[in-house]
Image 1 (tube, rainbow, N blue to C red):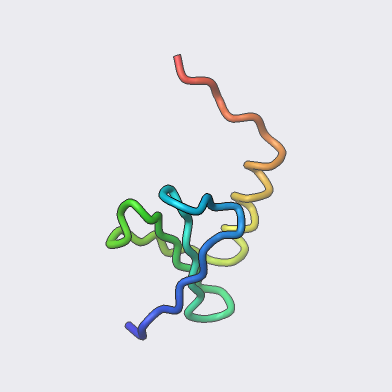
Image 2 (image 1 turned 90 degrees about the horizontal axis):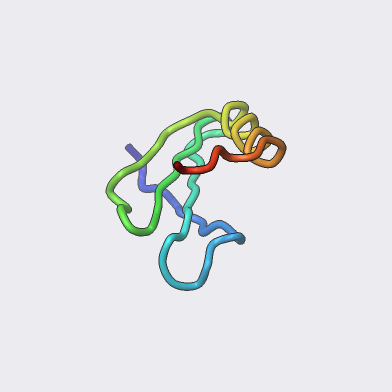
Length: 64
């Protein structure tokens, strides 16, 4: 796999709990969280857009 160029989300805080994203092609997106950088989620651009759209429009369930 080619070396990834990670970009920190502009919504991430300065310290911990940062989300990083890297693209290896126009349709392949890699995501990782700063607390566990060795764990990477690989998805596609359309699926990531759908996830973001859903998170923006649907309230998250409350923990009980």
